[in-house]
Length: 258
Image (cartoon, rainbow, N blue to C red; front, side, top):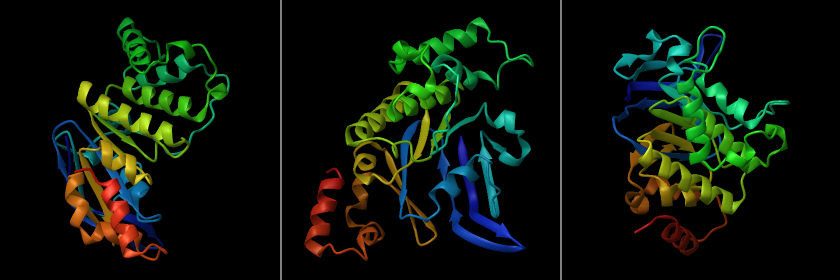
């Protein structure tokens, strides 16, 4: 459902290219939860935005549902992949129900009318995520954790096979981070979705994801969580810190599941 061939991502300014991550070759065809990690500024957001056409690639190709992404119009992409930004933009005067309903826009007619099928889908997702009691509340009155869950609900209502989230737990406390990543795991299984999310919280990522993507020195490394125990690239995340080698070993032991 999502494939890249020698993809390079980054920026182009005044005919000068700044490559952030290069030679990216991914091929995902089944539902799974993927966590994208890396140091600040390593290119996590750039990669995610490029994969869904929000940012231009520098080189290579992106295949979405057996078709080059450049052949899609933006509205067509919205029926294939849903995206949740790291920024929570306030939606004044919009109720939770109305905001979640916006996820159906790629399927509605020119007037934006919701069909019975649309309404049924919206209510199903609201119930699944436990948001029924918030339906008529204004989005702006919710906590950050509740807002994030509403934005995920909007993405689910889009009914796409692929969901991409940029730092979805950045506004949450520790308990909220675990709740969110557990929810994403459940959704990937029960709804048969490919979910890719970036995170600075490697602890919760490693304990829930099926696969870990690590951006390291402009390369994308992909493997199962347990296989990172001996990867030098993962250990280098702790370089330039005041941690001793023993401290690092203890941290890795606690992060990576057996």
